[in-house]
Image 1 (spheres, one colour):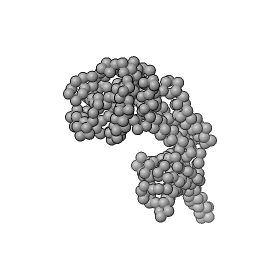
Image 2: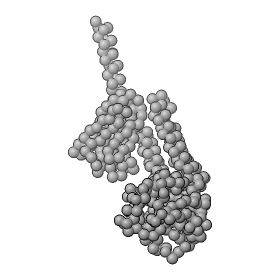
Image 3: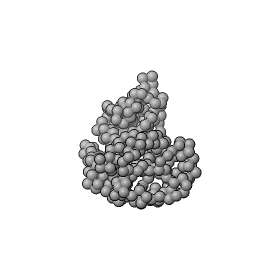
Image 4: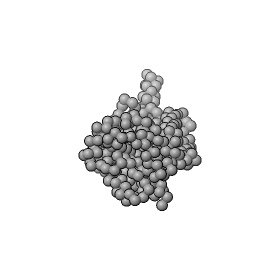
Length: 334
């Protein structure tokens, strides 16, 4: 009987230890919360939620079976690294989400890595309009100093080669490869639009249906504003562009505005409603037009500056409310 009891107690102890080792305690504080709730995604089918308390703090207790990154949401989202037995605490300001996150408790190195990786990807996304303006050496340097740093940081982690970390490592390397492919494909798709290349000709039409191409604006610099009626940022920038057009009206530059709306009735209606004037054109076919495809117009608004010789100064120039004027000055060589 004593042997049986001893074995039973051993089994219970073993099971309880395993349960304890799989337990995760994840706590935190949200500064400037945007909601009363926080969420964490455990797997594809399980998402846990809890309310913030009166001090905007939260606590999760749950079990996991592997070391990996898990999605945490509150207004924005981030990834937290957890493994069986983790006790992690985070603090973040919802107004400055990723940059503000601090950690204490378990696995600080892994979570600092994830934070850095997220910021690297966000920076690439925010500066995607600069990529088409880079030569190959500049582009390669940018990738090496961002995605390359991410990979190096991952492989230098002290526990990364252990079996426990295998899925985390595999997941992160796949993410690296996926983003690297996306960024390289984007750069390669823009090769013909890098500075110094001859601008690709296009045909657009005015409100009366008369067709125009780049040849109609030869021997003059051109600033092109590409927009659509559904793009609120495009419309917001229009007054700034009009001010630039007025400021440089006596210079050797034309400001032309091209809509990529799918239907010209929509474009014509907005022209009248907003009393838009100047060189206003429509790319026949909108998002299916050759103009849209050749100039890779997936993000609007887009501003393109071409010099008087028909060569691209920038195919992704800053917005008029930012530093577009600097590119105009470069095109005019003044």
